[in-house]
Amino acid sequence: MSEVQRILDAIFAISSDLELPAVLQRIVQVACDQTGARYGALGVLGTESAEGEILLSEFITEGVDDSMVLQIGHLPRGLGILGHVIREPRPLRLIDLGAHPDSVGFPEGHPAMYTFLGVPIRIRNEVFGNLYLTEKAGGGPFTDNDETLAVALASAAGVAIDNARLHERVQELALLHDRERIARDLHDTVIQRLFATGLGLQGLSRVVRDVTVADRIQAAVDDLDATIREIRSVIFELQPDERGASGCRVRVLALAAEMTPALGFEPRVRFDGPVDSIVGSDLAEHLIAALRELLSNVIRHARATAVEIRVRAGIEVILTVEDDGVGLGDERRAGLGLANLTERARALGGSFTIEAGQARGVRAVWSVPREPHRKR
Image 1 (cartoon, one colour):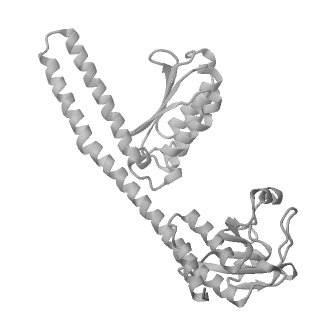
Image 2 (cartoon, one colour):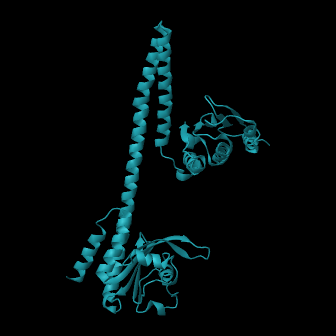
Image 3 (cartoon, helix red, strand yellow):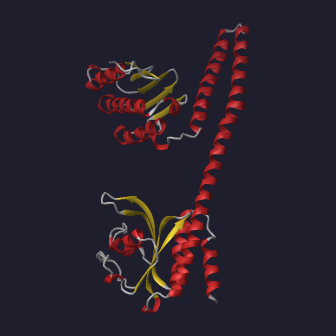
């Protein structure tokens, strides 16, 4: 097989995958196969260390099995020879990498490596990472042809990685489109039909003379109103949040999950209104602190078996935590945390109340304006 054909076959193999993790692994496999390297790796550039060194965020290997990884203890961070190729992104070919001035040796359990070939991988003139190959088959050094092939593979790898990233973005956009379409259908069709049905039932209840039947009709209307509120909450959840993991919804859910082991059960969480649009980062800090204090109070005093958390965002931002515990005893009323909650709410122009629950337990309501006015 000619050298040109080998390169074309290798490029075709790299370009055959669309998922980024598979592309990265494929690049290393093909590079090892085509150059005869026993070990290969692809290091993805990450953040900068306190010392100014650019470290590796990912390290995809070939030829190193799980037992070797366990013996080594940790993957390389991008120091020594690997760091040299990061600092000077051009091909580097060595007969004995241990003799290079930048070599820092190997950790205990690391396989012996001598011959080395490293080349940068660029995407649109930006260095994405580096391809590292060691231990040429037969014990000889890597050749000029190996370097030419590795450079060609790195160029193809840059295109393949860029293509995989584009594919991921297209999938994300398709998912967002589906979410927006579902939200639109729920609003324009489902909610409107439920609302019309509720109006019809309300009109019917006015002409029904049997009080029992009229009460049942009103109960059905109330259920429809509750269903509409739930669907609206789902619609807001379907809408994309530009803040991602920093959004209020995600933080409330994360805190509920964090407190689940101490509670002994998973709290039910409900949202009403455009929570992430209304609750900014500053107000979210106060809301999360209030929620943490309320859940801690349940853990310490309530002996509850269920808790419901509700966050409603409108003219006011209202946090409600209701449990089915032992009720509002003196110990719970005197808790320092409850005084802190009252002071925190007042400082933002809001209020905090705590009362007996509908059936049993306690219902706590922490409420502040959507644009808090701090006390001066």
